[in-house]
Length: 112
Length: 483
Image 1 (cartoon, rainbow over the protein chains, first blue to last red):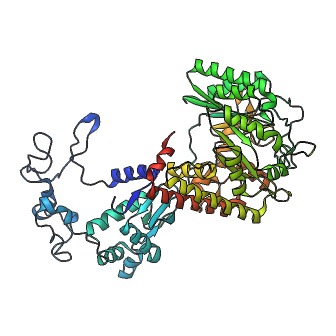
Image 2: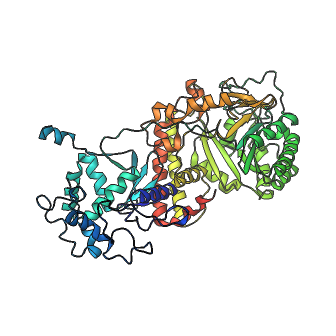
């Protein structure tokens, strides 16, 4: 956790629940029922490969890194609701993100 | 919608319910109602302080934290986890009323009042004092074996899937009915073996009737023993006297020493009742540990109407809390260096805090525990046995009256105790002892308001000690993980 540390037993249970609710990028790591791989629905608008999973059900063999979908949505797909308005209000929101695959955690937090 | 309305409606952060405390330069929060204890990192502390001071909007808070030099990714994650854990809320905080659990609770323990007779006449005893509520006229003085056996059968049946059950023997003076106690233990073991359950026993005694033969039986069956004693001869004999006024100290001490020497298979604790003339916590503790040889000593104020002369009263309760604080810090010193300390009150509270208990009811009475009187009447607990209050059936006439039990649990749930709804100590207190409430206010569902400040003071102290142990010797806390 970023801001606090669990001390007693109940706090460890709360921590587990918080991580479950807010956990870091997990969609493709999550297990489906009965040990099956969890497949996210993905973007319904495009049929290009590279978003969901590769032929083995993993993400290693995609034609572009999974992190790229952040940019695909607002640049390639033109889906404004998903990202800050980079033309007018938040032109520098990806300034610290030189390479999406490596630096995607550094995209700025923008307050609407 | 105009611009001003948009600003006015922008959600602001608020703190949720918790009790903040410090220990060894660290900041902690005790969350209510979950009972979780977290230490706050620097960013967590800044967020809490800022919200407490200004109730900022998300934007205001974000800008403040960016200016303070925190990474945006840390800010976002921190706000989210603080909100998810129940420390802060984005918007107005509206406490949720606790819901009464629907499920019927399996029984875990019965307390058999195997006699209503006693060979002592302690001034403060709730069974004989002016505050007596039990009506023993027409009831047998000693519980017959048939009633004890029916009670044990009932416990096995009502314990449902529980693998382990517990029988506590109580009185009067329990050992006045030792022959029946002995046969009940054997009966319970036999029946539990058939039912595939584990059974444990305990009893409370004034120690006057302990003999080697009795003690060997207790040791053989691993029966936990609580001995009522109030300190050295001067203090003990102020209240704990025979009917002719003679003190009991000289009679019981050799017997207690013999008990401590011969009985090593279960815990043996001293239980001290504090009253107007007996409130010298450290003196009593040191005498019982060093002179008598107990490994554990617990204290409790006498339950009494405030008008009684032996009632401890506010001033002396202040002395008691000071004495508790003194012993609790000593407990802390032992804990950080990994040594045992026998102050049961601190140990029990720290265990509850470590578990993160969040109680819907102040104790197990009526929930996992029931009391049975000498005639077989079932009641809330041993303190209400044979009184008009909290009746819940008869062991030989239909067993537990589930409707009465459900009714009691519905009306005594923390959700129904409005006085407690804004108190941070409610996860550990839940309103206080039903008997204490009944004697003071004539109502079992009343919160024991005369102890509120005391309980908050005590729990705050124990939280600070818990925090300090968690920093300086966290492995000490592993002992609380059992069960």
